[in-house]
Image 1: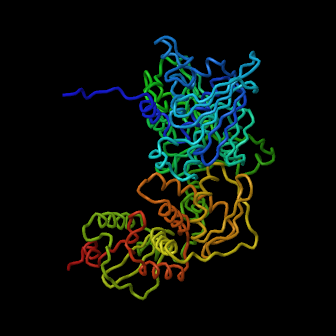
Image 2: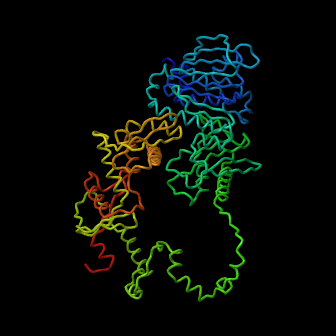
Image 3: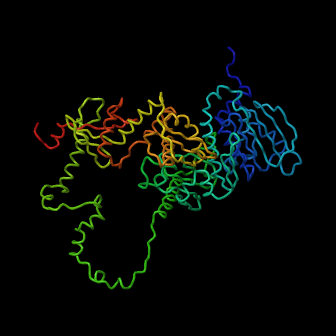
Length: 614
């Protein structure tokens, strides 16, 4: 029997190893940018063509390499960062394992130009499929330029797994943003297909956050800074009102290295407890500096997952630092006005405020109008005794009704209707709490959730539009120009064709800028910027669910974004139209996300609740 275990050829072994580090163009972007940072560069330029599939190039003004070092840099596990095993536990640089260039060279065509300040000439190296094709002296400026061309040209199967250009470009912008945030003192630029997307002058952290994440955070950032003997925490968190439906603008850095940590994210969320809703995510850019011996960054090929020596201490420090910063933001300073001396002499000030006067003051309608909910426009009935005798507004009866309704909700006889036929009586519809519509039926009544119902109506309309005839567009008399963050620009470009089919007429208008020429005919005009921002945010929220197609995510996002929200007062005609349209739907009983659009309450159950004999 022949032996079965054989050594893999070098080219196959290199490609397998490269698959751990270089999974898509954005992976190469991350590695090359971090190498430029490690080289001591003060200016780093990233150039992209075809979403990185045909070209990823990084040019820096760092220290450069000698001819020998340039050649050695493409060998596997060749590194200048580690000489002894002890060095592995004192890592302060971004890269250290010597895998990046070797991995890139295994799956792409690479051109390297590099020169040190002390050298008269630089070095040019051309590598393809891990094989050096050319090496020669070259006249070049100090620093290093690495161009990765035709990624996965020798691994067609892996190239086929790459996403669309817009999707891959979003990943590139994500990686660029992470490195640029970590080093605000360095100039960064990103040019894609000859169009400059980012031009980030060196500055401080707040300036870099606004450059990358958008000027909407300009007055919404809270500074975090806590220094201890064990560790330092600094950065910014967003005020509670900036919380979004997606995790997008959340960044943790440990010793300037971007990391993903659900554990530390939980610490931040705890600090925001009761300030934001459970389904929303506050913005933060937080840096943790601590002794490298207290952290192990060598646990994942991309080094985004790390281990702490004592993670409980880190958790406690992060939570305390963020909570302290938010507490300082939340405290309203007291205003110290000097009172006019003549005011102090008035009888209303001089005379004591007795219990009788206090009772009289608090029982009046004016006091109640300022201190009780929903009393601002309350007019007391003329005959107070009648209202008291009838029990209207009495505390006890309200509690009894509330308890009965709670009991009813747990009854098996009250449940979402799944296509069961019933007749809505021809009576006026009633809106409750600006959120529900009440309608009598032959067997009781139904309670409709106005937002869930409207989402279902819009969702089915958009589904039909996506399959055939486009949604009618209402052109704006005064087209609106909107400016987006770079990451949102890439996303909107990806959705442009589908949005046009669904009634939105949007055109590019220069760097990160678009003109909204028209919106769906049934969407109110005048707040186009808010509409687009809300749409993109909801789309990113749905993008966390991989089972949906791009178009499905977009339709669901639009259905949510255009739907009537809780708190909106509806006229009689609006309620009638909503109910009529709902029961024309193919699936009227549930919203697109599966929540019931209405509940049916049976007359028999109402009689049981009031203990009426059947």
